[in-house]
Image (tube, rainbow, N blue to C red; front, top):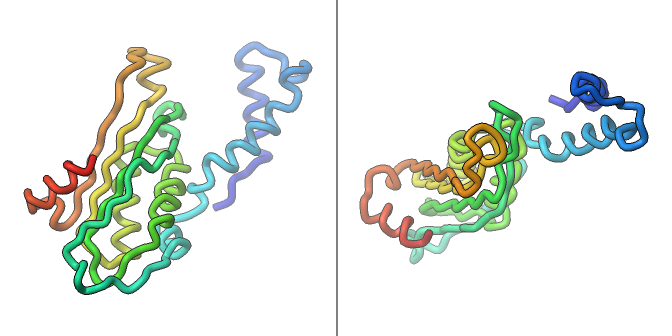
Length: 191
């Protein structure tokens, strides 16, 4: 799916008019074009399925058998996204991705790239975690994947209830992370 920038420009112009402003005034004349270019970047992930993202970042290396029970965790991955309910910014999001290798490990920068690309969709925070977990499972072949996310939602902080210090925390647990309390404890101690 390609993002239709011409349609975005047309509709942003209409939104400006609907707000009672003049899209031809000096400060707004280029706004539809700027918004269309911004949307191409911030919604880039909408161009790809989870399978395509897995293929894009499928770079693994053989895991040393001595470290077969070692948990891999990359944390404090900064991402942003947009809530699909209000198209409001989800910000200050920190993602932690953990998995138990199954013969292969993924390049750690790829975990950050996966989180970033998944966030660049109209999303729910819960789905971001599920999508990341699914992609990491596909690439690593491991069922044992966990994704923890903490973030602020402007639909909570800037509109509606306006609770500026609220944070939303989600955990997506797959495989042994769902059933093994000791593994869960190791994971949550790392946060």
